[in-house]
Image 1 (cartoon, rainbow, N blue to C red):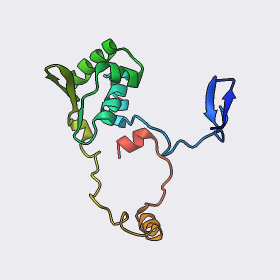
Image 2 (cartoon, rainbow, N blue to C red):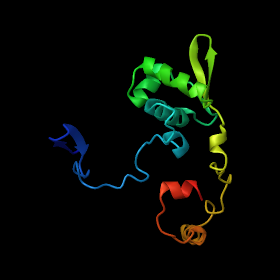
Image 3 (cartoon, one colour):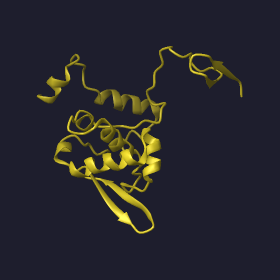
Length: 161
C-alpha cells in the first residue's frame, strides 16, 4: 500500500487521501457517535456524560444492551474508568440509563426512554418501498418526499415551532 507521511500530524495516510487542513465531506464516511440534541444541549449533564450516552447508544447493538467494560467505554470516549463510573451515575440519576450488575461479568447498560424524546423518534418501516425498487425509481420516490426548502431557521425557532 502506498502511503505518504504528513509532517504536521505525524500520521501515515493512504495514497490519495486529502491533505491535512483541506476541506473534506465527512458525510457517510466516518464511524460516529451520534447524540440527539436533547442530550447534547442538556447543561445539567457533564459533557463527558453526554458523550458517554452517545457511545452507549452506538454500542447497544440490536438488543439495546451494552455489555462493554468501563475500560472499553473509557477508551471509546478518551477518559479513564473512574470517569465512566461518574458519568454513568449522572446518567442514572437523570433517568437516561439503567445499569444491571451481572455476577462475574461486566454490567449491562441500557438506555431508557425519557419524556424528552417524545415526538422526536421516528420509526422507519421494516422494508421501505425504496429498498425494493430500481435506483431510478428510488431517486424519483425520494425526490417526491423532499419538502421544499423554506430557508434556514435558528435552533430557537425550531424548538418553539
